Image 1 (tube, rainbow, N blue to C red):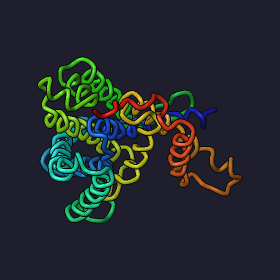
Image 2 (image 1 turned 90 degrees about the vertical axis):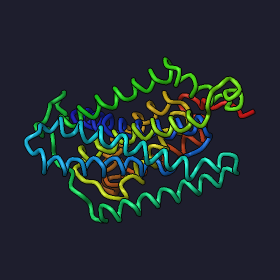
Image 3 (image 1 turned 180 degrees about the horizontal axis):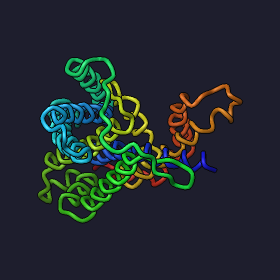
Length: 309
């Protein structure tokens, strides 16, 4: 039972980060009908920017409390990632909105590799240690262990997701985003600037990815230029699992996928008689993706994307 509780906690932590990234995928798909496969690398940019800020704080403000340093790193990474994602939308995607679907897909893959290459040129190809900023003393929950960093990650993810829901459901910006997702032409006739809404959508998704990127580094204590590929791919699986285009589905899909992956990592050795180890946990995300696409292609919550006029 202790192992089960521990893996559930691990899954919630992992799933929270998947959910934050999956929200970026599902929001962009909702308004543009586009899968932005470069979004995982925005997470990587956020982690790298956060580490650079922490290194500067370590030099100029070494006595600053760790939680304050982490907060400054997150607040610094958010505008940087938003700028990167807005530039991606303006340069790579805007001219391809009416192109065949294969063109923006290939472009997204190319942008992903460009971001990885630029990051390798700036920060190097070797893994970089992420400083431990918060207390490492374990917090016991029913025989399982969780760290202060993981508790903070869960809180930040919950606050971010709640804030996004409030933005989409209760503000004029959110109504405009839903209108553009429903029908961009009619929304334009009603005075909604589709370009501004699309840019805002990319920026909001990047902000969530920045939070996930910095907390990913804080949780795993190591980052590198290609770190965004696998989390981005799994977050896409989470978005599909929940229902692509549905923000509630992205949240649920991320949490569910994280728990499935954590439970799989904890029990895969027993299930296979020791043939497979916990480092094979990545296969579970793709098994889930195959099953969902086969059994329920619309995902858990269903796809909330209207037909284009």
